Each structure stands twice: as structure tokens, then as C-alpha cells.
Image (cartoon, rainbow, N blue to C red; front, side, top):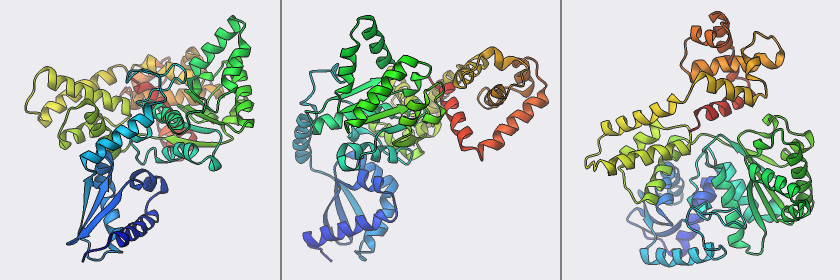
Length: 456
């Protein structure tokens, strides 16, 4: 059976609607918005896909769901072919998109940021790999860019180190400037904001500082957790927030934890953080990690077999930064030693060395310091035999992490913590393990701490 172009488009629209009942709207929007039906003949449905990333993702993760949905409208369907758009068309599109995307930038290299916006044009929506761990954050980011009538303000995205928060925030700024060249956009870290505030106070130019930030259409603030304890910065951010918000302009924040868990923040500022939409980005699943590795290989112009990439993706499962670090090491060793036959044993050897280096940095001192800083208590208090309420929980978390990440025996943990009895250590570790299954807040805290401890 052959199907006319008009009928095929109608069937495709019905198929997408059918998919909407089986998967999330962000997934549909992300992966199917640019796929178009080409033909149906001899049981084969041909689809045009815009790039290799979409082709890979739909084939690997969504193929059978799509096949089932399409088959309900084309009973004769046996196979779906994903066809990359012809090179001639791709070239034309790339040139057009490139001019459209980058024409508003000053001349900067790939790794430089535009000093007027702090945006780096290599961070874009189209090279952000979307998976189950970040699809809601991605959809929300696209939403505030594309649909001004449905804005959430502020948008607050949180997650551990190396999970793509900065990429997503910068993509928002870049997309806004691509579509609205007249908009005033600024991406800034909390440290940069604080430093600029200090400089303005030193130079008696606070009015210029206020004018600079309060005149923005989009303020994007990264690493919000570092405002903790900085009273003057918090005060200025609060007033800047109110001014921009009341002017119906957009604010976006990121942090390594939700607002409720950022210590030493004024309540009025915390309430502003919590007044919009709060979304987390979690650790990427295997399919997402595999897709990221494929994209990174394309960027580096270095091809590795799927089996090798899957091996890396299975071994490195905490964050994107470590994943890219492992890939860089594999590529470096292969090139440096001119390895022609890449075996699984060879890759395992390289990754073993890499993981050894990562875990070598996990010391009892590092764990104690990170937990103490997180809960805003003194390290010395952690080691004392104190029964203060604010000390008990952090100390139990330290015991658990020394056991879980530090791979220490109960006796050794007791020696580190002022010669505590090992039965106390066992009780504390088991208590945390039990609570992690029921206490969402504790689970979030431990995941944040785990990420910080394992950070490169």
C-alpha cells in the first residue's frame, strides 16, 4: 500500500498525538518536533530526521514506542527507516542557522564568552542531550524562551556538579539573543555578582551597578548556593530581583541544592527563590550517557565503536564532567600510543587507572570538611563527643559517607571520630541507610554531599 503525501502527514500527526499518551510532552517536543514523514511503501515508513543525535536517540530509546503508535494507523507497517536530511539541504540549513545563531555575537573563539553577556555560544539547546534526568528542566528552559505568556518566574534549576546546569542556563541566554537581538541578557555566577558588587562599593559606583542589573530583560544567576553567608550580596540580589520581577522580566537561578537546603540565606530571599518553578537535574541514565559520549566523539572528530562507548558509559555513571574526562583520557591514550586495535581489556585498564585517581582523592579529612561546610558547623565540633541536636545528624552522615565512599571499617571510622565505639558507628550508619529510603530531604542532602566529595 502506498500513501499520498497529504495522508501521510495526517497519519504522522495522529501518531504524534498517540505518542503523547505514552510518553511525556517534553520528550515529544525535544525529539519529534523536527522529524518529518517522507514516504510509506512496501511496509517501510521513511522519516527525515534533522541530525545524528536525534537519529541515534529515537532509534535507541523510542523506536518501538513509535513503531507501535504508527502501526495503529498503518496496519501494514513493518519497519521504520530514519533518514538524515540530504547533505545539500543540511549544508544550506547549517549556513543559515549559523548566521542566524551567531550574527549577534562579537568575534569570539569557541571557548570564549562574550564579555557583554558572559555567554559562550557553544552552549545551545541543540547540543544539550536530553534524557529522563533533565527533560523537565529542559522543557521549562525552552518554555520561558518560547512562550512569554506562560512564564514561570523565577525558574530555579538545581542538581549536582557536572550535570549540565550551566549548559542549560547559557542555552537560555543564547536562545533569547538568537530570537530577540534587542533583549538585554546577562549570565553571571554568584561569585562574579559578589565581586562586581564589592568593586562598585570600593569605587563609589553602586548606582552604576544597580542600573546595569536592573535594566536587564533576562538575569541568569549560576551557583546560587555561594550567596550563603554573604549578607550584602543577598540584600542587593533581593532588591535586584524585586525590580526585575515587578517589571515582568525573567530571572533564572541554578544551585547545587534546592532553596530550602541553602544555609545562611535570608528568609525573604529564600521565599523569592521558592516563588516560581523549582526543578532538579539528576544523574544521567545509561542511554543519556551513551548519547553524550556520541556527541562528544563527533565534536572531537574521533570515532569509537558503540561497544567501547557503552563500556565507558557503564563505568562512569556519576556526572557528565567525569564522563567527558574518561573519554578524553581514552582518546588521548589511543592517539598517544597509536593503538590500532582497541580491545575491551585495554579500555578497562585505562578506566581502572582513571577511577583509581578519582577515588584516591577521597580522604576522611575531605569528607568531614565537606559535610561540616554543608551543615554550617565547625569541623572540631564534628569530632567532639557532643550531643547537641545540630551536631548529631551531620556526624551520622559523616559516619555513613566514611563507610560508603571512604570504604573504611567501623573500627577505623571510630578512630577518626575521637575513638568512638564501633557499635555506635554501626548504629549510625544503619540509621542513615534506613532513613534514606523514607526521608526525601535527607536523600537529597546525601546525594549533594556525595557529588561534592566525588568532584574532580
